[in-house]
Amino acid sequence: MATSLKNLSQHSDTNITDISHKKFGIVVSEWNEEITESLYEGAVETLRTHGAKKENIYRKNVPGSFELSLGAQWVAEVKEIDAVICLGCVIQGETKHFDFICDAVAHGITNVGLKYNKPVIFGVLTPDNQQQALDRAGGKHGNKGDEAAITAIKMLGF
Ligand SMILES: Nc1c(NC[C@H](O)[C@H](O)[C@H](O)CO)[nH]c(=O)[nH]c1=O
Ligand SMILES: CC(=O)[C@@H](O)COP(=O)(O)O
Image (cartoon, rainbow, N blue to C red; front, side):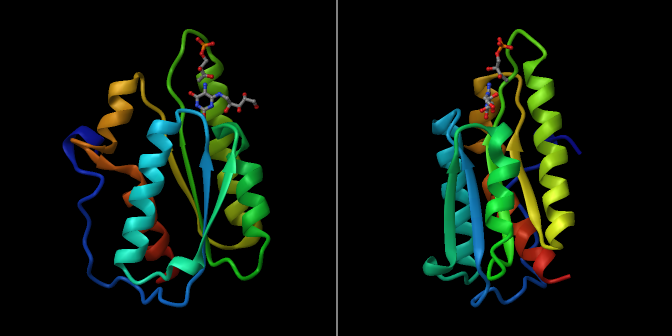
């Protein structure tokens, strides 16, 4: 279902796992910082609301979304980390660069989760423009960071 038809921050709180002792790594791209900081705030707020301890949430910055995969690997290889959330925003430009980044980061993040057998969540916005990004980073369509955090929690409960 398209995000425009649902809210990223509306989710069922039923069957949410006890995460009071779980440790989360959040990898944040510094490109489009205004957006990614909002995603980060949404993710942390959601984790804390559902019981995660502040001291169990670790942040790792990377320059851009293309670097999220390696950043996720550096975090996922730490055995104490239970789940990794990757946050970024890749905005379409004039060239195919957008496609290459999005493809690389989607595949890269997937491979890290499979390699380390732990949830590595794709919290990357891929909008056509800045307004679409703002709408999904705490705007009218909710917050992708919130959605990513809920996804991590649900995966820990499976
Ligand atoms: N244009 C965007 C980028 N570009 C930078 C790449 O992610 C990468 O850092 C560079 O190609 C060097 O490897 N990154 C974003 O996250 N968002 C963009 O809109
Ligand atoms: C997604 C990007 O890397 C973007 O900033 C590149 O813009 P352009 O395709 O106009 O070079």
